[in-house]
Image 1 (cartoon, rainbow, N blue to C red):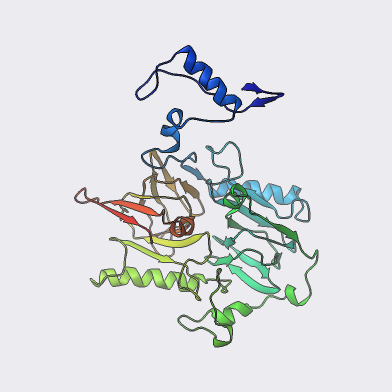
Image 2: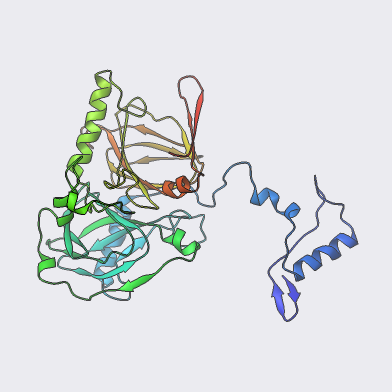
Length: 394
């Protein structure tokens, strides 16, 4: 760093010989010292970093094994209280390329949350959009705006920003699930707000109804309550049931077997969770999808702008992300950085999957890229080497 009056300039420039660079002379060196003092950076010294030919993410492909996460979360359950201060017993995935920050990708947070029997996680709210996804277990209710919502295996529970929420475990055993939020994005653009809520839930909120009030209003496919009509930025449906997701995926593969269109590629069924008031993404900044890859099938390599986090819900397989390749089983999580190719080969069977296929939950930051007209996808064709590129909207 160089001195700037009594302060130290963070700008440091080095004159180097190279293509399209000016000759290195004492005068150029002196000019660069002047730029440093004035806090200026000439584009010709940084254009390769600022305008690369394609996205180069700082995030790295990485896999976290579910059993290791569960073991560590269980130890935390014995040692770490769930009340104020820690606020939630949530343990975030830290991508190895992001300098130890608790970020799965530059825009997405993913964490395992662990609640002991009889525990209540106190109420709060925040501008960050969030969801919960349950890979195993039941017995916990999330309480959103005083509406108790059951959480069961395979359920997806989205929650738009600035909704009061708490959790309580009515079971006699611990339960873990994954949280997804847009914390890194909101932190990076300096837009986040957070409020503490009540320390205790009411007796009514500690009840355990089979269906929440939101499901009774919005949980009927293709039918909207006229009394509640109006566009909402986040979905008013607080629980997308596994039974419905499972049936939709099974029907797609059955249509494929009948020779009818329905899958996105051979052996690959895909559904997207949507907001029933808009038919768009379920949250303003987060896209959530569910994949089912038939046993023996392999997906074509896919690149997308923006990043994704996947969790294996059921089955086993081989996942390749860029230069990294892993075997994955139930609960494992992995990250796909921006414009890094992903392909998935299903090795599932009836012994490790209820569906006999490899089932994966995915969430991404695609809505941000859609809104900015920056979404782009590129799929390679495994059979003939051709490729397909898709621009916004996705």
